[in-house]
Image (cartoon, rainbow, N blue to C red; front, side, top):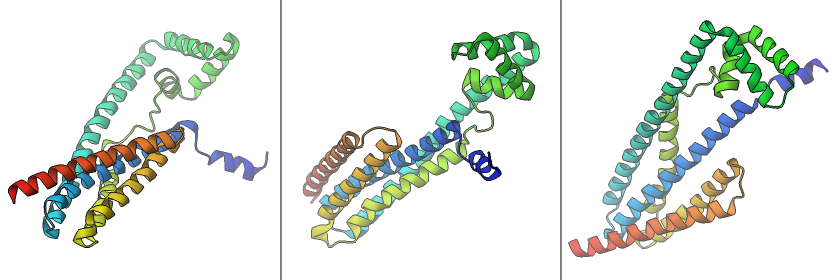
Length: 240
């Protein structure tokens, strides 16, 4: 094997890291989708009640800020809990390796036998991995955790907030740029097109066919805007 070919394969993403990246991308798409739907519902509802651009802008920005902060906090708490659990499991595994190395070695052999290796091959693989890094071998095979790739709660929170904000900007811009009579129709069409794209992208990243998820998210977004439009028109008429 040539040096260039070996270097090329060394730089290719491993299955675990690739799966993590796809999960991050899928989460980003879902965050943007939430931003689109929630902000569209707010601005369409307010636009149905009043033609005042300032009121629509204020409501949209407030909804964007509240949604981004809420998404960030939720993601931070969720990922922090997950990371705490992973760190607890890793600490337990490290302690067991120090106190019961033989039992842990036998357990590793058994795990590889369960994957289909013969006893001799499983022993050889477990022995070589243990000599290299016993803790990492047990963490990945026994726990399914890569100790070098624990998710950062702060990174997850920031990514979620950014994805939500990017998604929320579209309906906000779409409803503020046109003239009053065209605001809601333009925003409605722009939001549905964006939802179709995010639905198809999320499905593709998840490995499924895009049509059904795309139709579901578009119908959901349309219903959300119809409901908030009706409420805004009703409240606006009642207040007026």
